[in-house]
Image (cartoon, rainbow, N blue to C red):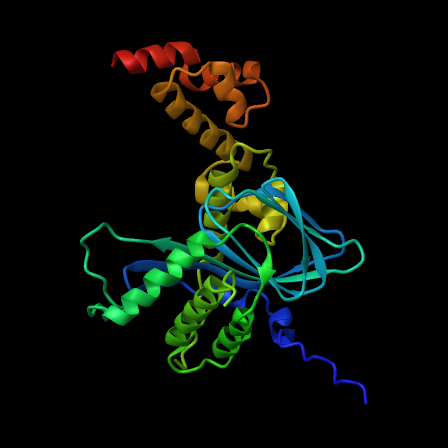
Length: 316
């Protein structure tokens, strides 16, 4: 008798893949502050490519269907169902769906913040955390930080907690935030060991344009040295380029290209003041296509040359 086909638990998530993204959720776990940024199912069409990029947060990737390739550290790794990998601040990666087999990926983006030494760990409600809770969180985070940037089997089925969180949200489960928090901690714990051999009320909706503006500006801040286009960033946050341009006009009072140029210029000015590196190198390393273009934009923006700006800043 043929074996029964393996069930696919993510059908509901495919209908509403970004439902969990609207939650504003942050909590304390032991010594750490955890802030959920995104929690969704990404669906890559055949041959879809996301070029080199990086995030300032941690992103958990679980392949739950199809196949593809991820490039990290200049090395291509095959992706297929059942694999997991973690990217963190400064980890540049690119993703490619197979040309004949669309890929599905469960993604959790979180910020992990550790308070200064000596601060007493607290629970989400403000009580002092127990020693066991603190020790468990410490070991989990330490293991996560030691994970190599390579795909590995999801040995402890961390991916199973994505549909648990999704069902809790759609059913308006009592104690929703507690359930989601537990799901996130389970994903973190089970992912951390992957590298070892061994309320009824509707959750508050975000101001979506403000949320999209923040996602876009975070991505620009993380990737300003690279080629960034309006369409590239719009695709990352699942809207059209026209919508994104309108959001920048409304929320930032600027155009998309002006914002990108402003970020690059601000970062370049910091380097001008803090180092003696050649101006031409600073220009090219901060996303400007040529040093001549950098000099033109700089003079137009500040009314002086980059060298004059550097000399004046050091004098002051």
